[in-house]
Length: 103
Image (cartoon, rainbow, N blue to C red):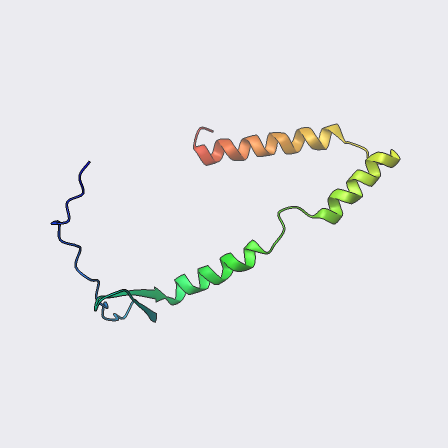
């Protein structure tokens, strides 16, 4: 495959004027040459980015609760209530069916 250098590069992106629905900061990064790229980040986007960072630090599993259950199982104190398990299983299936619109 031959690389053709005669293809013109894309035009540089210029700053988009602020409108009433878009508020935020504009970050500029220059590349080699005189072209500059710009990105407009709305307040909502910045907030979502911040929340994503917070959620990344939250553990998915409660390690203390898992350890307590392990200890209860090891000591023979953990009792499984089959009726509660069956009720919750049926509830989750009903919820899934309602979400899919098949119920």
